[in-house]
Image (cartoon, rainbow, N blue to C red; front, side, top):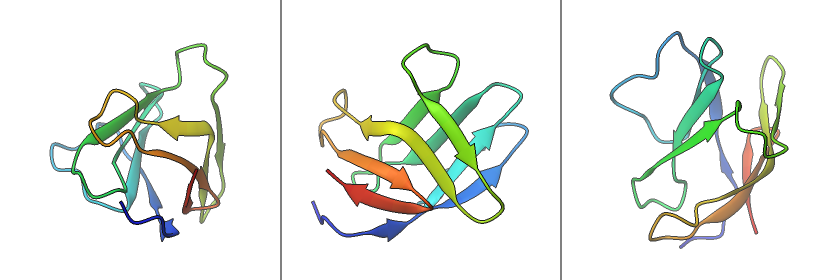
Length: 92
């Protein structure tokens, strides 16, 4: 796994598209859910459900995205752990 800083763009959508592009985080406000491809390159989808009471908060401005708390993909084989802050992936 490359521990580099990668950018991720925000795309607000009505529905999550079938084909997910890398380096994009899709947010469907109607369903309060976001999805993106794991930035390690494994190709797995990472879903964030903002309706779950885990302390997640969503911060959005016109150019960047911040997702709190950190994303820990412990159910994926890669076990990636990172923050998304101001549109950048920051590996833990």
